[in-house]
Amino acid sequence: MPLASTPFDYAYRLRRVREIMVEREIDLLFLPPSAGLQYLTGLKRGHPTFGNTNYNGGWVHGAFIGLDKGPILSLPRMATLFSTFPSHIELAVLQDTADPDQHIRKIVQQFGHVKRLAIEDRTWGQAVLRMQELLPDADFISAGPLLTTLRRVKTPDEIELMRKAASIVDQTHEYIVSILRPGLSYLDITTELDRKMAELGSEGPSFPTTLIPMAPGIGPGEDPWSGSQNAEGSTGLVNGMSLSFDYGSVFDGYCNDYGRTVYIGEPSAEFIKVYDLVIGAQTAARDAMKAGKITGEQANLVARKSIEESGYGEHFFHRLGHGIGLDVHEPCYLSDGDNTVLESGMTFTIEPSIFIPGKFGARIEDVFVVTDQGAQPLNQYPRGLQVIS
Image (cartoon, rainbow, N blue to C red):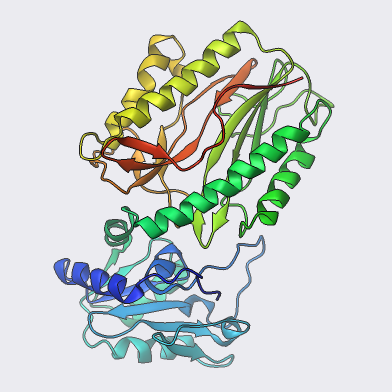
């Protein structure tokens, strides 16, 4: 497992998580390789692959944190190869022929009587089931609320890492716009986006790089992310097309999530109107997102107001945005039903859109940090309409 290069105060973070564990009567916390584990220890996740790479007892991989003991990092032997571990973390290595159940039993016994165990939401189902068998009297709960309490407000050091991730994307987009032309294939564009981000220092895409081309006979249906329905033979840019981008970078574990729309050829008056509505919706939301003054649900409504009043409300079909940090999508959300009051230091995407099937689409997305004066952008790439002739 690689280590984060930024020297955060992990001892302080562990003290904070233990304080919350005491408040919520949690005896033990289990975190598999995840954003939560990186936040508390500096141990980074590996890059995901298509195939499931597993070893004997692979489900044991994760850290146990008690109120006064740990972290104890449990992992199969193969996971120790080519890895570096900080000195403050105790390792418990499962050998290739050892019994995983006995291995976990020995670890858990070190924490005494466990009445309540909090488990990270994306822990393997196999791990949950086996630990429930080993701890039949324990109450198993989600660690999600606990981790959200810790992670949703970013420190200045975290924001600086997110600013660097944003800069990688800004530079990447400047490059990609310079090479766009009719006839360029979607594959060439996505490949160049990922390559350029890596060249500029990204650890990899923060999620699969996505293009949304739209024109009469080209593009998806009611849901722009539902998959291509291009006319036969259309595999690249053509005149009369809107092209929306959705992609992001990762810098030292921290994510960016970004979007722009360009137009290939001469845009219609309606497209220009729609594009301006989208930009205006983002601006209205960022101005309204002042710390302590607004909830996620209210910010969502602010952005939708002018789009709905202009008759395009049904074509802005998704939430306004989401929290972002070590995960590309994190609580809290700029969405119906999220009544979290925004705090200074929270980071969000603001990503309004209007997609009209069979015509065109327009979207913008940047990462912002909440302040007393409103949401301030980390991405700096220009927001004006760019036309590719």
